Image (cartoon, rainbow, N blue to C red; front, side):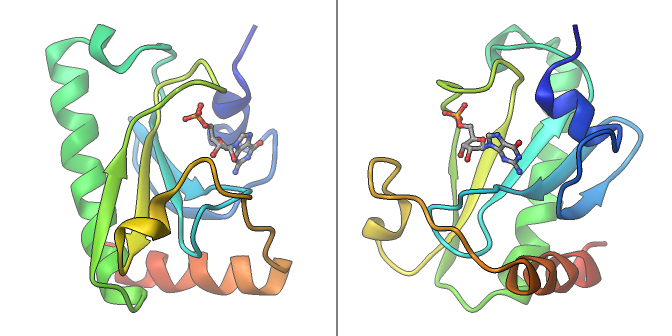
Length: 131
Ligand code: 5GP
């Protein structure tokens, strides 16, 4: 059975898309730890990132880098931070989070729930900067 992230990448479940190519998909986390929190996934279904083939692994990080560069341009922040957890969804994903200090990336803090219009505006702003 397809993972929830495969269904998102295939458009079967709606998401706020920020970038994609034939091997990857990037979209806003539905409950961000900070505004502009993005998830980057390979279309390949693999739970654990370090089980990806070397080629898939390298290409995933290269794609994530392009997304992070776009995020930095689109969202006022000191830098874009990275985390790989995978405690909830068994489909490899890289968290990219715009931060101004360490506290902006606290996965134990209550998650945000932003209005639809704000989520769409953030996604569009990142998408517009993606090269
Ligand atoms: P992890 O597996 O790395 O612990 O966390 C999974 C992340 O995926 C969480 O930050 C959660 O908010 C996000 N997430 C879970 N289900 C969905 C979903 O259906 N759509 C989106 N956009 N994000 C999701």
